[in-house]
Length: 511
Image (cartoon, rainbow, N blue to C red; front, side, top):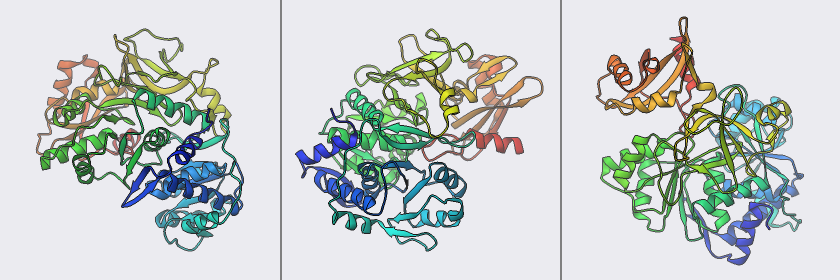
């Protein structure tokens, strides 16, 4: 049995080296060509003094260099640290110092962000740059590392299953982000479960526009491709017009993975141009809740029911709607093969029956080992039987489909009643004037918290707050209706399209 995804990839490359694997901006790589560059990069790291277990940060946009670096770091026995390309000096200083990163692979803009931090990052010895970099930190060109490694014959022992592969830092929407420690065995276990559930084979080809610094793009999209021996059309970023053109013109594509924001933009572009995608074998959505209405709109326009799944940095993928059978809008299905999920009371921690809302807990070989140098946070996150507390609220419907209702910290308690924001959001987005809605709780002297709805209206739609309150009152218990409605042009989102409610709270508290 292979001990790592890297081992599976190299085995594919040995057996069919000429088979196409990766395309990026006109550059094509076969399995063998990519394996050669991965091996060269790993040897280049070793030649420059990197030791097994040392941390290498990837502060990069999507590119062939990202893929080579990701696999090359593992081949060198080092630990990858994934860094969101939107992060700036405060986030960078925290992550790179917390992980004691020794080398960072980045572009010119990333290097510019790091130069002022030199005194705050004593462990950072040098940069590897994929583009010309500003002076201020010792740097070496990516191609030079490849060339140095190509001239080396240093041995590259394969990673062991228990070796640490990656530190995935949580989004940090409350407090400082923590590094989730994922071992090679956890990466391999999860990709095996995902590809089994989704019938992924070497005949598939994925259009991948999601950022590789995130679990969805990297540990689902790229990992599934590498594990099955399939192929991928990798894009630097998502551009709706380019993605729709590819989905219409390229008959080889069979898979597309996105977040709800991307699906919304694809739908808008299709309506604007009249272009629709060719039939695909599988459309997948995750990383943020997909509204039932958007799911149905996509099905009506594209002729395909999206498969929604549920995952997170610490656990990779947890649940999935079925490949065969009903894909129920508003739910995220059942656990992947070999994994467990349950819903427990937030106070007693006892499992709840179907139809009752509580915190989602998961358990299985895919769950991370713990938080980097945070034994306190690790102990708090797990119970004695190994169940991980996700912080997500949800419930099982009568047929055993999991429905996520929000984050535990987003639960609104108003007048002693529990209010789940997503339930109110789904009602609001059914109103013909509402394009997007975010519901949150703000302090209230009488009720403890009041329900506040932040609304993005459709272009030209009326902004009638009372009409929306009445709409909710007709469809929900009176205590769930918004007591305040705020209209805005756009909701703040992170790189994966999740609404940043902490930013909304700060804005509203200051207004």
